Length: 194
Image 1 (cartoon, one colour):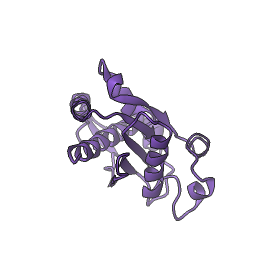
Image 2 (cartoon, helix red, strand yellow):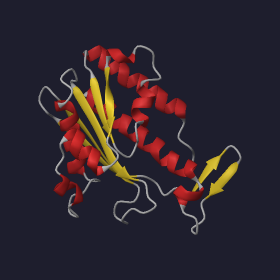
Image 3 (tube, helix red, strand yellow):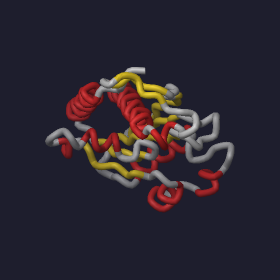
Image 4 (cartoon, one colour):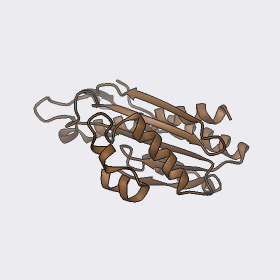
């Protein structure tokens, strides 16, 4: 698989900022699996504070509970859990409720492995919520299996013995970059609809 281009992500961030400025809206984020990477890309743009309120990195369940009030029983429920469409939507709603100046909220949760349950490995759940009518856009996506990745120096492959995230953190980083890119795609789609 080819690497995600930082230039491609930056171009999408610029498009999101343009759409937010044109519609006079502000955004807030709740990030789990991306660990603040979406916010980091926003803050590369000078003057972004006009439309970007901030981001809560709620990586652990305790942070989701203490900072945004999610029910700990829901987060540990095997039928729902911290990596689910319900959790991403609730994160978006809660971060929006905690940020009165924001008009739109985006949340992402997911699992990049290597110790993820099989049905959640490389799966991300994204939600965008609009304050004016609480319309929700969602995406449930399975990231590609990056057992190998094409780099400038050839193909790098993770061994089964060592696991992707232990020996090759750049492969895990690539999953995170793909998650950022796909999240921006959903956000653009939502902003284009109003």
